Image 1 (tube, helix red, strand yellow):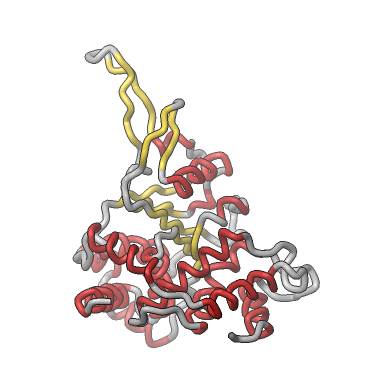
Image 2 (tube, rainbow, N blue to C red):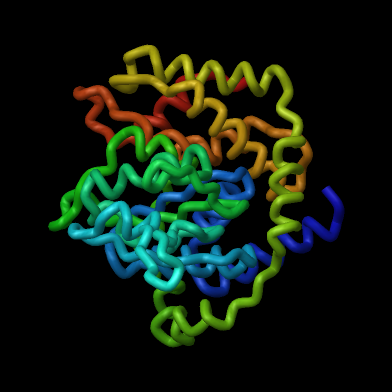
Length: 308
């Protein structure tokens, strides 16, 4: 990868880390997700910086974005848009909704009803929406960065498996450590910092980087390792249902992006291990007697599968 591209990616990460302090690993996961062309789900309790991170990502990537606050009474047309009769033209004119943006910030996505959530499925998979029988393409690139609150909070609807599978990664920020929280308490307002962020990439440069991610080399032994992990997830020892082929492809893409951020043109087993919990845990349900959550179960599986 050219030195200029490496410097741009470093500047991107550094800028994000000035806004989201003490969360370098999670920030790198987010950047890897978008470089791999995937959609991102950020899950955590309110107030830890989910929406701030989503805004910062959009601005740093230099993309046009729209933010939608999902609510229980939200309708699919609130996302996709509607046709309204205009008397001057004596015809119905389509008014596009907020989904027609390069980045859709879906804030608290699990507060909307399943009907509204399902309106995103076609957009996330096909990069298009069908409104009133007409299919309309979405801008390129198109990302969904969604935030959601824990399922045990009031007024939330669990995302269906088909929706979760559309997200390349799910990350959790967690509470900051003492030093990072002290910086938040004594420093500048984070929302104000986001508004002043400058884009470090253009859409053309982002498109070039995404194509470069696909060129990162994954050797046959590395692909064997990914297949061993996928097969282990299907064994019934760890999870009720295993990973789909789409999930296996997602793991390879995310690992390639991780390798690029590390300055390498090949994927190492460390890259797979670094991104695996974030890439597959939201697609899996542990067996009933595991006594562990999905992420802990994925890590246990990682320890059990031998390295190539």
